[in-house]
Amino acid sequence: MTESKHHYDERSIEAVYRVIHERRDMRHFLPLPVQPAVLQRLLDAAHAAPSVGLSQPWRIVRITSAELRERIYDLVQQERQRTAEALDERGAEFLRLKVEGVKECGELLVVGVRDGGTREIFGRRTLPETDVASTACAIQNLWLAARAEGLGLGWVSLFDPQALADLLGFPRDVRPIAVLCLGHVEQFYAAPMLALERWREPRPLSELMCENHWPAELPGAAE
Amino acid sequence: MTESKHHYDERSIEAVYRVIHERRDMRHFLPLPVQPAVLQRLLDAAHAAPSVGLSQPWRIVRITSAELRERIYDLVQQERQRTAEALDERGAEFLRLKVEGVKECGELLVVGVRDGGTREIFGRRTLPETDVASTACAIQNLWLAARAEGLGLGWVSLFDPQALADLLGFPRDVRPIAVLCLGHVEQFYAAPMLALERWREPRPLSELMCENHWPAELPGAAE
Image (cartoon, rainbow over all chains, first blue to last red; front, top):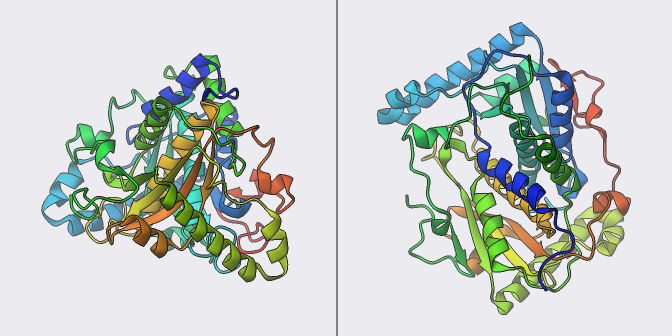
């Protein structure tokens, strides 16, 4: 009775779950190019994302200039140092992690969010952050499609957004949210790299959900 | 040379692209239940999302109380009216659209974002909105898995987040970002509903991307 007539065949459903569970946030890349046809399919996948009020707030810059790539690398390194300082006692541990693949990856993309401001009202009058949410859905599409194509993707958010916006000449209402490292990898991590590196223990879903009312014993703020 | 050895087989790749392109933001539902095993798979898919610094900021509330569902419906209706007023000359047109399926859908989920505040530094020191981004990736996973299972999902963001947080007893650092209507549908829209309803004309990807520097002639702010 509850079986939907619209479901995909068993193998297709399996492929969808497989890609969802095998996608990884990659930091290690092989210095090999990405085929233009593959890149186009990935970008089209991103552009198929939902967006609040059909606003399509994502803006994508493909970095092909070696000089720009170098300057983006520098921005990431600067923020990496600042993050290490802010992390205090875990700073040294953080600096031992590989947190980006800007120089090695086959393709470097910067994704910006166009801020709907007070003009875009539909679905965001009380929730202006849905701009970011829509853009993240586009990135997740690209991420999943890349995994199916055998390519890794890493979302780097270690940068000063204003400095990066200035570097790329973004208009004032577009703010960068992601530096995406995309490319071939030697292998995909078996689990999230930060779990493998014991940076943090992932929490089970059961601790992050509940029925009807948030129970006092479930952690919100507390870790 | 650029072909990755990690790519999925052709049929699996096709399934991944198919679900990305056939996913729709649904507003029309059949009043049928969702099988518990299917719901669990969808929630596990959401929980497989990437998150900044492995922070897993998503918080999910499954609404099973009919009274709570009614009160969430009321909150959405209130914001629907306020949005219509704010939309001014397009307000009447907006009110003719079906923008939610809170009462009919088989499952109602509220998704919150746990704000990392100043405690979560990794990957969000300069970009605190990555909390929202990670949570949106989780929702996109759920959305795609649901489509493969033949179920529709609609992300409703028409509500006062504080009122909804109070209703569900969220801790102070958790803010609702989505009311998700999930369930069986008569049919999936052939294109985004807001395009079919001529609320807005979608823009091609070519207008939303560029190489290296954002060109002055590409619209950022301007429509």
